[in-house]
Length: 493
Image (cartoon, rainbow, N blue to C red; front, top):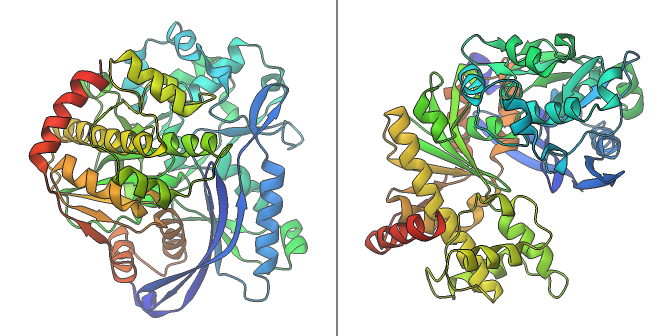
C-alpha cells in the first residue's frame, strides 16, 4: 500500500445490473473499506416500437438524485460500472439517438450468421479472442447494418453504457479498456480497436472513442452536473467499467493457483492470466479473453447463471412471490439429481416462461420434468454446479494452469447451497465473497486512480482485510462425479 494508504478517502460507485442499480459509498481508512448503500433503484427493459431498450434517462435521473443526496458530505470521486456489450449512439450535435437497445432484444437473431458471411468466425476470433454470443456488440451493429437502421446514418459517436454515464456526468467521451474488450471490436494483442472488423461491418471508424485504462481520472463533474446536484468539482474515474472486471479486481485471490466465479444473473467462470489465450482449441470451446485491471486478462466463459432461477421466480410470482432463501430451502429438501439441464441452451436466453422452457428441455433429453418449485430450483442449482466443473476443467486445460480453489464473488456468493454444490462438483474449496465485489472493485480502483492505493495486489489486501470470505469444503465427491457423467450424457446431448 502507498504512503497515502492511511489517508481516509470516500468514493461513490454506481453499479448497474440488469435488475437494479445502486449507489454505494465506500470509505477507505487505514487499509480497510466500509460500505454504505446510498441509493437503490430498479432497472429493467422497456419496450419501444416492439424492441427492448434501457431507460437511460430515468437511470441517469436516479444517478443525479444519489449525487444530490451526497452533497452534504461529497465523495472524493465517482465511478460507474455496468453489464457488458450494450451502447448508445450520439448524433453530430452530441444528442443521444434514442434509448440504448438491450442485449436480449431479438434484433440480433441471425446477425452472427450474417456477419460470418463478411468475416469467417476463425478470423474474428483470431483478432479478438472473444467468445461468440449473438448479443455481442459486433453482432448488434451487424443487425443494424443488415436492417439498414436509420440511426447509423445519423450517428457520430458510439458510447458503451458506462461511457454514456461518464459522458452525461462530465461531457467527456472515452471508452474504458475492460468494457471495450467485451465488444468483439477490440484486438487484445495489438491493444487497440480492430480496423478489419470495423471495415467488415461497414461503419465509420470515427464512431469509436479513444480508449483509457481502468484507474484513469477522466475529469471533473461538468458545470451542469454540479449545478443540478450541488456537488463541488469532484473527479470521475474510469474503473473496470465492465462489472465483471470490477468484481474480479475484488476477488481476494493470492498467487496464481485460483479461479474465480462471478455469480449473478450471468455466471462468469475463469482464470486471471497475464496474456490472452487465443488458439484453435479455445475458439472451439468458445472461451473469451476480456481485459482486466493492471493489464491482466480475464480468460473465462459466460454461463447463463442465476438468470434461470430469477426468471422462474418471476413466473411463479403470478401465484406466489418466493424469496430466494425460500427457494434455496425448498431445493435442499428436494431429491438430488432427478433432472439436469445445460444452462446455456439457447431456449433459456429469454423465454416467455422459464419453468416451461426447463421442463421442455427435460422432455427433450428424456428426463423427469421438475414439477414443484423446489425440484425446479434443485435442477437449476445442480446443473449450474456441474456446468462450472465442466468449464473449469476446460479453462485449466486451455491455460495449462491448475486451480486449487475457487473464489465465488458477487450476489450469488450468498447462495450457500449453490456454493456447497459447486465445491462438491469441482472437488476444490470454494471461498465465498464478497457479495458486493463489483462495487468494491469499482471503489478501490477509484482509490487507486487518486493515488490512495498503488497496485492490484494492494486492492486485494484491502478486500481480504475488510471482507473475509466464507469457506466451503468439498464433500460427497464420488456421488457428484457420478452425477457429472449423467450431466455430460443427458444434459449436453
